[in-house]
Image 1 (cartoon, rainbow, N blue to C red):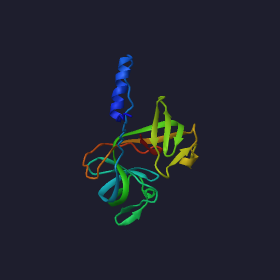
Image 2 (image 1 turned 90 degrees about the horizontal axis):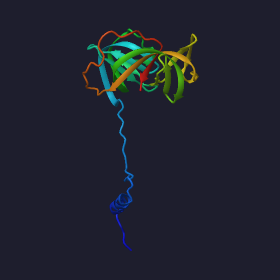
Image 3 (image 1 turned 60 degrees about the vertical axis):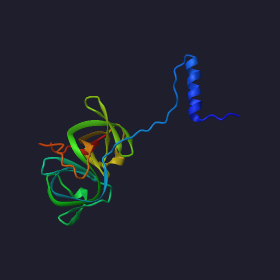
Image 4 (image 1 turned 180 degrees about the horizontal axis):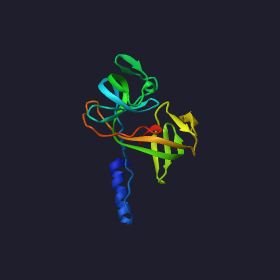
Length: 200
């Protein structure tokens, strides 16, 4: 009995395929790598910032250099502002914060802010697909505990159904390390309209 290694078998198969005039297609292992904003453990301090947008457990803060930072917090994670614990839902757009401390969060640098109206075409977990007024379809991440205004009534994400019409402020982000000093978005930001969503 002759034992052939996997490499020898693959070479032999390629020779047979070539002799028959067939294109050689051999199965190979593939690896897919994706990059997401960095989840950071540990204590991070932001000395001064202004609240720009708030939705559920997410908040966008504006730093003194003009850059916008999205903090995506898990339910139950609190901020400490001037030594006092604060829930994200306690924050209001326009408020100035000092000595903000966060013990656990995902932090991203905001590069684009847009405002949209759309119709919900699909929901899966905390991801929502919307068909926008211009006919395009886009996918967005919904903050934990976010609320929406539907026909003048405030409802939770679980009450949103396919076909619901919503208004939203959309932020597009890039991953960020805690030591980054780049200003990804500098200038005037539009006031929040509807729920804050994150473009995927």
